[in-house]
Length: 202
Image: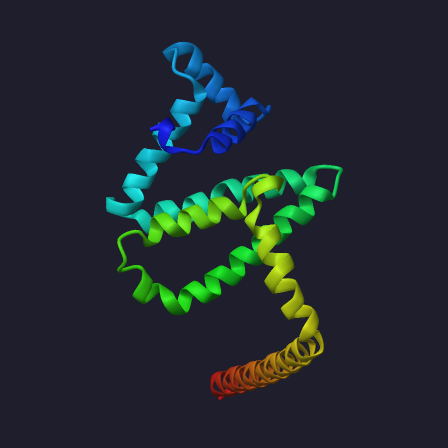
């Protein structure tokens, strides 16, 4: 199976597996116990997950977990770290993830019927969270999202301002209505209590 991958990809995979992190720590333990190289363990797990994403039940849930759980964990670590470079990288991922989720909402009904849809989506999300050399979210953000936002920033700000103003007005009106209803209810309860006391006095 490793022979199916290009040599430069295998070299990059080996380099990534030499980095110190939680995943490589567990892979080192498995490698020592099984005498199987980390490279082959990762390729085998990747093949199993790929097979499941094509034929398995609940492939959409697995795909969403892959695209959410690890990035969420690493984002929390990035927030808690001193440096800001990792914060920027993961913010870009979440902007791309959110944009993709909105686009997917409109196309998911059709695309989810294709057998390789969830595998393709998972590969896309993994590419978006990949290390710096391969990082897709950086590419998508800088080539598409950032230019679009900068070009339309004033229009977007106007729409957001209008929506915010409208939401405040709706909340304000709802608060007034609720206060008025509460005042009416309190007045009715007070009047009922006075009538009850007057009846008792008679």
